Length: 375
Image (tube, rainbow, N blue to C red; front, top):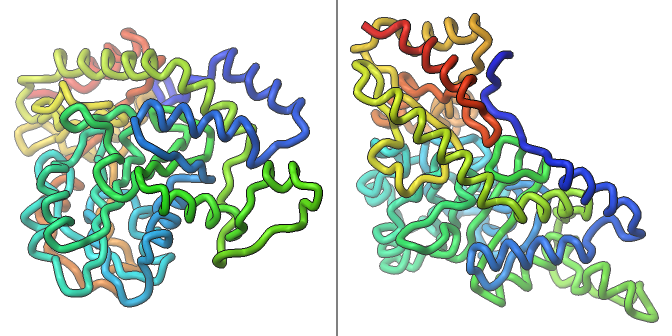
């Protein structure tokens, strides 16, 4: 591909940090993870940060820690990656799908309509790097005494009214997949301001033990530990933590490069008939995990045809995402069909290349090959 959809930025310092880590005797659940958690907590201004193996586990662990389980309902947007729904199902709870609005974030009106006596939690997804309307969502959770777990997989570096997303509810869950705003290859993080929840999550990620590996190794009897609850092996190892710690050290540069590239697209693609830029009304508040355009009926060719033509020119694009209710499993289990905004977004949206190291030449090549099809 001449222009990939995404490309992780792995620096010389990233590689050096990993190699230095490999000289240590403790390669998991160790001091580098603690430093990574501490720095992440400081950046997001949260009281606690809990590193886990991926973003899906962050969601699952948060729900389990909050007591969500069989018989409970958890409201999530239909227009999101399947991981959000899978995390709910893994607890024994039932995901309840709601529509999105034009920002591609969860629709407040649709959310209110799906509340029931079985609703125990809401998971808003800060889609593509734009915050949901947390004022309205927190009003709903407080009024109905619901848990609030923010899906921040797209949204490290995203703020809502000067507060980092993930700090408005009980927990905020982040992903460090290679396409994300920082990467640990695979990895995730939970942030919370609740000491009680944090202590439970620290234990749950480590088989339910009451002591971590550092505490056990510093004890004359390292086998002397207890199991408080059945837990999981969701730990984040030292190798990935060292990569994350290195990436955090230059996150402001990473973020500024993504924003600069996105704003360049905005200048070149706005006011083009048949192209709607999803982020344009919100460009001052966006962390730009994704750059999404909508190809409407006024464009000369369809979204799918544009995707194909760009592919032929060596430009990788995709659609984020196929709505959850369209998958076979959820057709059978949920019997939910009315999501007009979600379906319209799926039919029109196209994610185009965006990553920190994208060059102006690459962007100009993408732009030129899009605009050649305008009417």
